[in-house]
Length: 113
Length: 115
Image 1: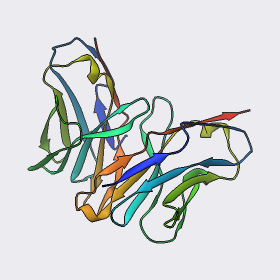
Image 2: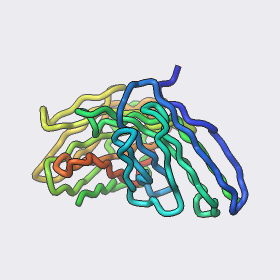
Image 3: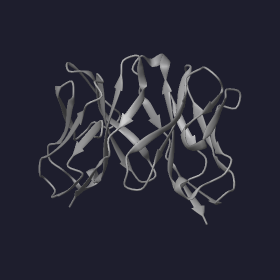
Image 4: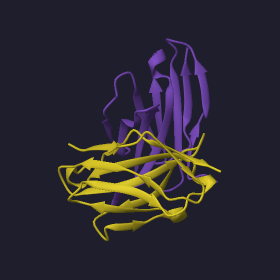
């Protein structure tokens, strides 16, 4: 079984719709992250959470929100999706003490029409 | 502030020949450096990491990278390419001095392996 899972794996939606992407991990890590990947831009950090009560904006948080429901779960929401949020979204985890070694989920491909 | 530049967006090699993927970084503190690989329609897999121990780092699948502080480089190499190495490779830096351990990704290098 995968240590970091993301649901859904693919989603097509329309402009203005609310979308939630979910991430779960069984690694027991305390830190979780959301990134988006666009062609030619690498991965960019949207939000990160160092524990359930510690949530921080990344470099491109506008238009997104997150919820850390438990240590193992970290959700990303698009309150009103727009076409330029079409991207591949990755969740990642790390552990305190080795915080810069991150482990990635398989990704969610989101298309906003 | 930290940044990463991957000098080639595409690299094409023949199977059995050496691979060189180039990465330069900028960091205000002592950096940690990583290479990740992404196969088509897959997530990112950690290939190797440098965290201030030996400057020559060995990773999985025969890859290695050398940290050169004077050149601010962390190039990825493999002596002999295999077809299964075809993928996108990301160089990543983490500024350990920031306290928040944010990762900065390069834009990626797509490796093509010709038979």
